[in-house]
Length: 169
Image (cartoon, rainbow, N blue to C red; front, side):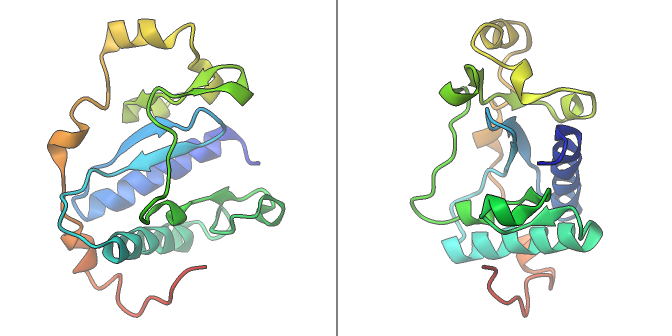
């Protein structure tokens, strides 16, 4: 597993790539060793369109940093690369809920963040059951506006970046 600094940088790259298509993203810790980059969507796209758009962003990220990213779900085959999990973009896929407590990591909490927070040194273990309630009282919920910003993926889907894509394994 690469250092979390690289995971943070990967999330920032994904945010910037989405921004090229005027798509706004939110971020949260997974409660484990990763981050989730999330996009609120208007209910106008099929599951296949959403997955196609996600795969296009992954391809752009891999083109920028080919040695940094992988799509291989098998931990043993990642060899220090960062997994961008587009496999979560289908019916029935799950995601650790915001503010979900992760038992196996010492009660860390899957915590929504503001993007500027990722630009400084923070780590998933910084967010746990003992401090997240106070964080919410002080800062509010960074995800509060999430569902008020449902977006279309049309700028990405219509960009030509999704044409001739072979399915990703």
